[in-house]
Amino acid sequence: MADAALRLTTLAEEVLGVPLPVRIRAWDGSESGPPDAPVVVVRHRRALRRLLWRPGELGLARAWVAGELDVDGNLYEALDRLSGFVWERNSDPAAAAPAVHPLRDPRLRAAARGLLKLGGALPPPAAPAEEVRRRTGPLHTRRRDKEAISHHYDVGNDFYGLVLGPSMVYSCAYWDEGEGTLEDAQRDKLDLVCRKLGLAKGDRLLDVGCGWGSMAIHAAREYGAQVTGITLSREQAAYARKRIADEGLTDRIEIRVQDYRDVRDGPYDAISSIGMAEHVGRVRYREYADQLLSLLKPSGRLLNHQIARRPEKNEAAYQVDEFIDRYVFPDGELAPLGRTVATLEEAGFEVRDVEAIREHYARTLRAWVANLEASWPRASRLTSPGRARVWRLYMAASAVSFERNRIGVNQILAVRTPTTGESGLRPRAREWRG
Image: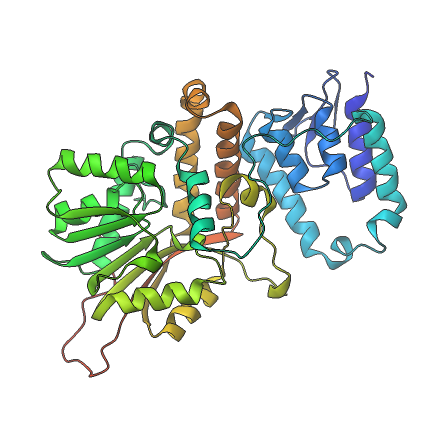
């Protein structure tokens, strides 16, 4: 079978009705497609069986995680071409809407027969071990959320240290126009959050989703705050406590393994929630907003740093990305910025400032991917080759999505406004760097 690549390309183009934007190299060494395009490598026929049994994103993701699919050359360019191709087709009603049921579409039936011949008539391969199996029952219970957080964050602090670098901050950095380092940009992001919150010595800060303790340490060390950090990850908590002890800040910082719904020791002067709200889910988001409001004193501030997706024309039809749900953030959901702002206002917050920093996240993700690739053998040993491949694909694809404005990230500053009124000027929402 020395023409597998040509047969694959022909099948794909017959179904899609347009030329593929990438070149295909098959397991038999054959190649087909535009000569100057990135090369998608199909290393094993099993990849086709995965697509046959689970057409679409999940089948492709399983083949990638298993090492049966790869990209030879610039991964970002390949993802950009493929995602742009899919995005344009999904935006075209004529291309996106099937004329008949898939089982009755002769093109799709012919494609399935072609895949069957190329891939072999064998049972579907088992899903890679890194995949979270489909869950049942209510979304975002305490137990289910804890399991989801553990899947993503309890994969080894050493692995995250390779990817994130010394800052150990797993959220969008805040970059200067020049050639600053990732560590500089993460420090500047933490400082930006502290300034927006107007932190002063002795203020009580609740850091929701505190990760490995970086925000808590910065707020206590640089601003003199008394910080309570909460996380559902035991590995994160253990790492954060050791860092805090090494910094000599145990009298100013407490780290708890605790759900945000169970915090009862307010009021706090300020709350930071950096990259945590994506895990809350739309069924719990109003509860999240209500809870954080109840934990703030009058005039207390919330800084909500959160990824947002673009609004759908039909929001009821929104579906969670299968690759992200099964391999990266189980049960995670992105909401449009407008819905997040509206929910915070409905809960009683006054939204004072919104800053979009989308481009900053694209640059952050590229830095993380570079760190991962530079330490690839060790990263694979610390977790598994499959999980390292998950993180590489997820971060690179996310960088492309931020660059193309398919998703964004925003810092929302909100205040619990006193009911009795207040006099004088409030602190500025942003203190710009000079």
